[in-house]
Length: 375
Image (tube, rainbow, N blue to C red):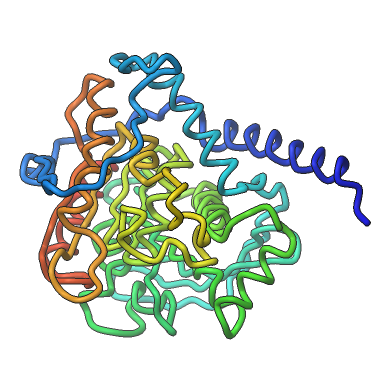
């Protein structure tokens, strides 16, 4: 029979080491965004429309004495607590120190750049495939470095192929479109497709990390994608952003919350609220999050993103949509935190009202947002 005290000590050591790694890679202080001019429609997407029947959220802008937090310094102290609590809940394990060992599997020339399939190491014994989309360099601009995007795909049997223009309708080829706009884009493949069934993929990956949740795996994978970008000489490491749709939107939100190297983010139809989508799935957070005793929600993650620019794209109407006006209570908390930094609020929601899809207007908004806030 295992020694319970030894197991407990190992678990506590794991959490301590995780907190240390988070402080190293994400930073307990909030990174200041690199900003240019605001998008012209900023006011349109930052005016809260909170439903009258909105479910109350756990207050986070209060200190240990229950007093309101009204200063940046007080919030940054509280922020450490929020970050530590979420890290413990997720079972975040230390970012791998194993070398990336990036391998080029194939490459092809496109009209506006190159599309290269690569593979790199997440941790010993586990590798991930990703597409790199590199725009043609503008010789007239000399050696000017490029902004970069970690683009996450949605739930699809073809995984990242729609993002990079190899499958599906044109409006889903947003990774390719970002490349045309001058971004260097990495599109990693989600771990759920490592085995034939999602649950088998979860079991395989978490066997080595039994105290972790599936979302911790996705977070680590996203952080390793940022690591890959940082190795590329063409990338301006001060101008890295993230985008995702549906499944990928969840990844984008978590990556922005936990990794301060991300300067701006767009999450399309991921379902911000804990009850808005299937967060209870074992590849995300598990059934505990739908119990009456669980009072955490993702307004806390949006608060961790603040004051960096974060845009939610919602479909509101239509079957199966995940974000819309019901997302506003969570977003409004992030806006309150952003105001403590004394800058314009750049956290909001664009509700295209076309259901769980990437509409042409929302795709355009995403690109404009990332272009404005990763200059």
